[in-house]
Length: 279
Ligand SMILES: Nc1nc2c(ncn2[C@@H]2O[C@H](COP(=O)(O)OP(=O)(O)OP(=O)(O)O)[C@@H](O)[C@H]2O)c(=O)[nH]1
Ligand SMILES: [Mg+2]
Image (cartoon, rainbow, N blue to C red; front, side, top):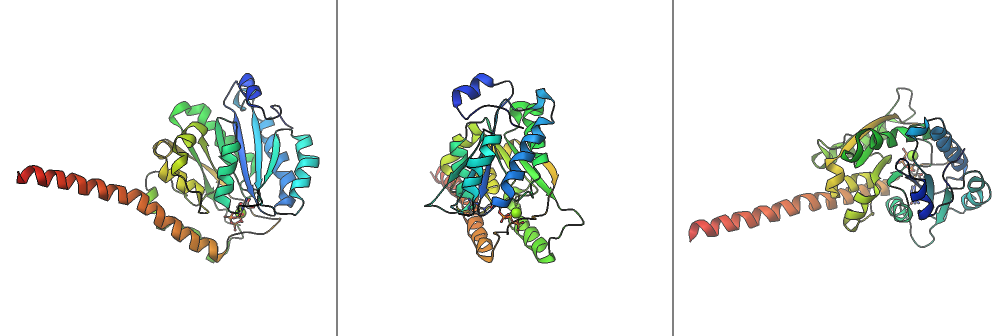
């Protein structure tokens, strides 16, 4: 089931009843998941009451040249069934965060939502990520999907420790703002994203964390929505040791961003006070 028409900004605004939604899906070798992802996402919105549906939903898959049939599947089948689904294939760039940013830049919606293709972010939870924008209006800028790992999850002890450790390392940056900075399931208002876009590097694996740290409007107006984190049944995880090292480097950059500015402001303030009192 699909609603909205072909992607066209004029059409989006003429259809507007509620806010429009762009779903961005970064992919690398996820061909086996794409059909279910699109079908289940549009079906989930189709099951919502009319007044709680976005005025328009588009899905932009940003693929890093997987060459696994993803392009052909989207063009020959998925976009025929769901005309607002399209795929961008990048051939000169690689990386999860930069793929998400590319999708955000191409998106036409009022709300930009990012989700993984591997169905660990259940498509049935997407409407609940959109709902806070309807319920709370402009007081919500950022919606974070907080993962609840079911007891029965096949996540290994090592994977749980890595996730918990990575969350703790980010704690000074995220305290009071977000409780699951490791999630990749989030949404942000397009206007806020565009205001702060120039600050976002998109180099790490944790783009939700970077946006929340660097975009004051997002960190000050956040809602969390809990969802049951699913299992990957098709394809492989891309989380490697290299990704973890990359995360540590990314974290260092974020700490510098937050604390270096505070230290500089404090030094300037103390210098002014010292000059004043020594005159
Ligand atoms: N475009 C693009 N997408 C990527 C890249 N690396 C990962 N992805 C996609 O990003 C999403 C998350 O990747 P996963 O490998 O599932 O990583 P994860 O969910 O953090 O780790 P697991 O819990 O082990 O699955 C998936 O849709 C991947 O296909 C990349 O380099 N480029
Ligand atoms: Mg995954």
